[in-house]
Amino acid sequence: MNFEDGNWIGVVMGLITILLFYIIIHAFLKKSLIKRAKTKKMRHNTIVFVNLISYLFIIITVIMLISFFTGSTLGVGVTAGLLTAALGWALQRPITGIAAWIMVIMTRPFKIGDRIIIGSVRGDVINITLTHIYLNEFGGTIGGEDISGRIIFVPNSVLFEQNVINYTSQNDYILDEVSFTITYDSHIDRAKEIAKKVANNITKGILDKSTQKPFTRSNFQPSGIDLRVRYYTIASRRQEINSRITEGILKEINKEEKIRFAYPHTELFLSKRK
Image 1 (cartoon, one colour):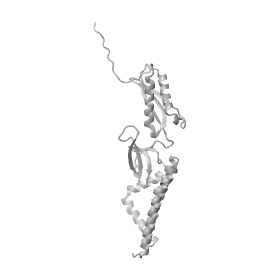
Image 2 (cartoon, rainbow, N blue to C red):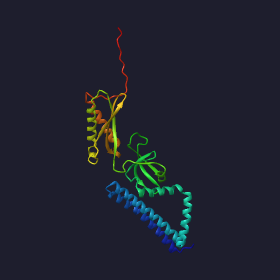
Image 3 (cartoon, rainbow, N blue to C red):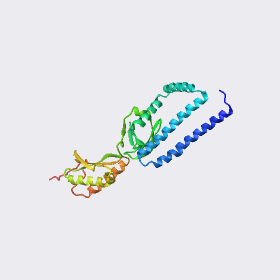
């Protein structure tokens, strides 16, 4: 197909305009809108909206280019049909990933900012694209749930194959506990009082937004009574708050004369021979 110089110049200028428009959307509009987002939900909606606009823009651009080079809308239909058949055969998993992306956008099993588990992968959602979910990993190579600093790229198609657990689907708080064992002759009521007081003081800011105050549960163990103080905590700060409550309980109980920690040990009693 022959093109006059003016046609080629038009194509080049069109491509440059498209590229500039795409850069403006991602480099300026996206950053500006995210800065103005005041809540996790607003940030999620902003990123998804900008990504959706970008994908639609790319699709429209491809259709316009095909129409320009073929010179008819019939060519667009035939080309689109052939491309769909070829891609459907060669790119089954990516297409499944796109279907999973649509499912995430429509049903919202999780949003950007949520703490989730997908199969054996755990992390905070930082981005949702057409092909992958980006997770800021917690735990991983370290114990507990502190942020590891690694980014995990999870293919969207995995969502149809793995269970998804959302820590923060309803709100940012989850139930956690600190357990410790005291001897059978310890003052159990005083130990429960100390545990609840420490947990209450450290989670004071959370109690204003949560209706459930710290409470205790207990059960028998071979070496003593196992006490568990349960409380609501911020999912992303679970490890930190758990550690602070553990240290607080240790300090307070060590001051008590009627409470002793129990632990597995062996005592030997030696008797003197007559």
